[in-house]
Image (cartoon, rainbow, N blue to C red; front, side, top):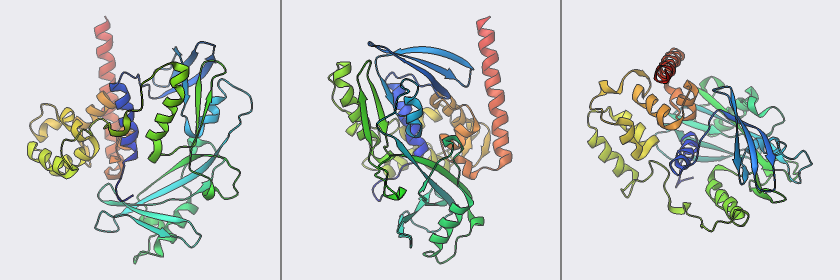
Length: 364
């Protein structure tokens, strides 16, 4: 969209950070393995994959926002046949070296009636996609197929002067859309709208079918409206003008904020400032802290990734692995070599071992 771009990984984690700042408890790498329902509340069993431990928590209500796993989560408390089902549609994208020197997106009409996007991506790349296929497999194993890569390359090459070949692909990713199943023959024709199901037969639960990134806040507000009566609260929706963490920029535009930040941290490599402004906004001050020169940023892992950012992601954004850091909290993996990722893994091993030892010592 011409008026809006989003780095999906950042959007997800900033919502978690926003919730934490408002009192929520965030538990990454944790599965809900059991849900017991009573007249006056729920008991959930949460299994931590990091610590190999289980714990029970009580709740007045549950919101099942598990996306493609919505039916699996529903089965935890209700083995009956659901009125609604989701249809999984797989979408894949490829990333190639930058194809054009401006910040505009293209929408191309394919000969098969579908459309394709070409979007500027992380400064030096172009993102191409997407596909739309029914998906039957395990959601945890979703990955792009050679057929999808060929399809995107062939369709794009009808419009680009230099043909795009599968060998040009630097990175790819796939996801599944959880669509409300309307038994439509063609998956591309299935509605992208969401449906909400409030069940108050005992303690309340809202099951969410469908939904997408562009309407996630609207959906969330509707969920809270549904829970108003069962939970007995009266507060109205408030998110329309609320910035996510780092988004409270006082300037009229982002460029003004960036220019001022570049000036304030004149000692910092400009490419790094630009990267951090885009990814962290005003949180950049927390990331930099009292550091006064490039040396103070610590080890340089490659690309724009420094020890200072890694520590920030561990301490403020629950990062625990190299994948968390270079793919789930940023897209820095695009600019890193396998040896550099290995180096980061080694650093993280030492860091967490040191933390564990320090806890043991303090305990004694």
